[in-house]
Length: 213
Image (cartoon, rainbow, N blue to C red; front, side):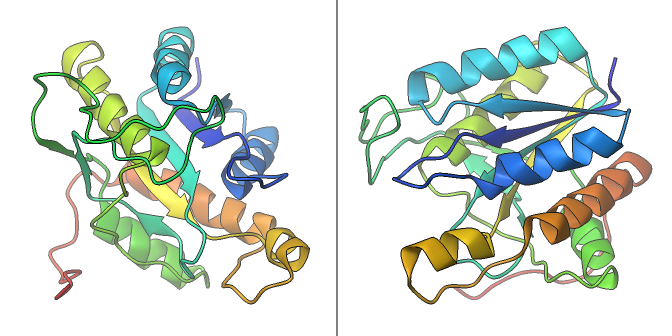
């Protein structure tokens, strides 16, 4: 059994790659204690795939990773909301609007990663990072909320959370536009620091990471 389960997503939105999966698979290739699973970017299929991965690997820690194009930092997420409101169709063509992730589920779940300690450690390793307070309302938020619901109802004692990563330079170059990016090896290094910090730290730092808007 892997100590840490990390997931990334298949490419979506017309992209040919997804740095979340590239970085997760790169990290797993050099760490025997990390299992990597690619999730489909599909509302109907993502959570069943996540549940199968949890049952197969029985990890102590779960870190789901997604792409957040336009962000310039690695951003661990604090809270997932019970809402799907898709701006674009998923890879299966589905585009739910104002639907719950889990009918009659709680309005929100907080992740159980020490996000402030993780951000501090990633920054100390030389990679830009920040706490995020919104995972959006697309498949990333669905997986984050679904993960925390699964951990609360089916996998007690397992800690988990979600982290967004920027575009890779490859994506920015292919688009021919200017946007923030981080190389896949740097993202993988940040995720390694995050996983090690989250495994070792159970009580988060009492420092400010709030925002005004």
